[in-house]
Picture 1 (cartoon, helix red, strand yellow):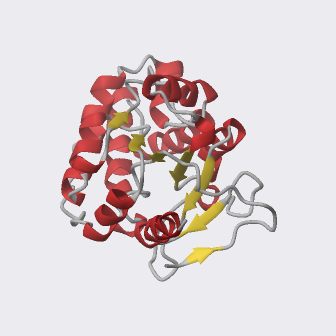
Picture 2: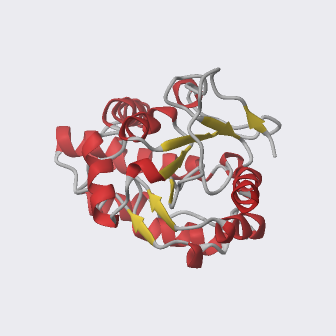
Picture 3: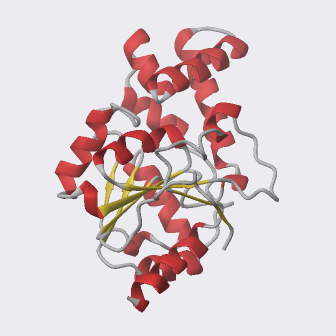
Length: 241
């Protein structure tokens, strides 16, 4: 298990956690599988046709809106009247075959006490495709997707509050696993134990620089590039109590 130390301070632990909350893309499956590049390409294709602009301009807007609004879709909705359902159907029409079953992750999830939930800026359909390929669908008690969030994405505070209310989660008894540090700011403020899931350092991953920042920020309790190993460690520690 490769775990990178969080900042030198008292990190929150997992002793009282009974709700395990996971982001989907680049968290439940490793970033080096590069599914996101497929989604990226589909977004650029859609924006090119939707706005009638060249691919360079479509890509620029896509990335600008992603950083400013949490998702490219949200920026397109606010500024251009985008139909989110149509957009999501188009951009998630990708090849999921690079994802392979993850039995070690499944065993780790099964060993954790309490409910396991997915909180994603994607759709339920996309989450089901991903967890189906991973062989993990039966481990999760629910998916809170962008439709449930009324198309308001992480890191907006109202999205986390709506999620907590929908699933009856006490944030002081919950842990959140994410690949973007900025999406862990609000969970930490709400009392959740936060875990930043980073790419495997031995694998080449194409991400924007800001997406990889934040592992030393005060709102990050733990950092790991091996989610399955990290969860096995938690389960073993809880068993020894």
